[in-house]
Amino acid sequence: MNTVSIDKKKFVVISQKEYESLLTKAARKAPLAKKMSLAAGKKMAYKLIDKWAKERL
Image 1 (tube, rainbow, N blue to C red):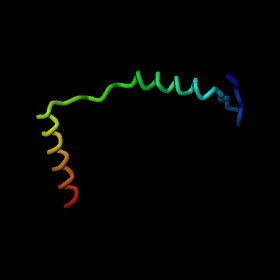
Image 2 (image 1 turned 45 degrees about the vertical axis):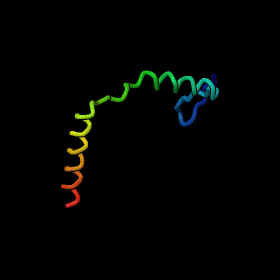
Image 3 (image 1 turned 30 degrees about the horizontal axis):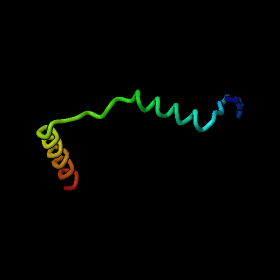
């Protein structure tokens, strides 16, 4: 790992393998997508369709 100074700012240079491992760690900490029941998803879809239809008029 090396540091580089550009315009009085310090940046860290790491290998691509280390960078990819950091990305996977960050992705694991991200919250998972919210799952819905079919009924809740259908209700939300209709609500979004109604909202879209009102914007089009």
